[in-house]
Image: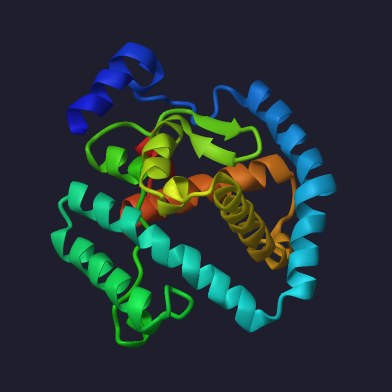
Length: 227
């Protein structure tokens, strides 16, 4: 897998081959995509998320969150193993076993109650642990903030999403839509913390959080070291 990533880097993504001194060299394009996403969110995603939150009681929303988080533990486990964190990967697998059985298919999270904490890992983090620079900041249509390395990692993350292989297709698409609405509804309360230039706020918040996750909570003092 590591060799495959660096082949992709050299053949198709030369921007990753050098450390960028400017974390946002594509700001002009990024701002246009950001504006597009804001319009789509204002007229589609936000109203749907508000409706979801209004009609779904809190215990039901928690169950939906737990269900998708349980599925996500498979990706967490795979990336922990790829990063050499075998202990964390084994915990992720145990979490899946406990929550899928005692947690009624993941609707409940008894694993956390017994001290098995959830990890948050993805292929973007794995590539960074392997030594790849994060590359320029990148805003993706509909998906929002990313970096070039994180964007490269998304197809790998998607390949490990069990929902991707669920049939029939219309049921699978319903689950995909539910997951997107769930995620957007979770951000409704967080919007109150946004201030100043929205584009810059989202960019800086995203890059700082990625720095935090890549370093497992050990935040670097020099914010630009990861570029």
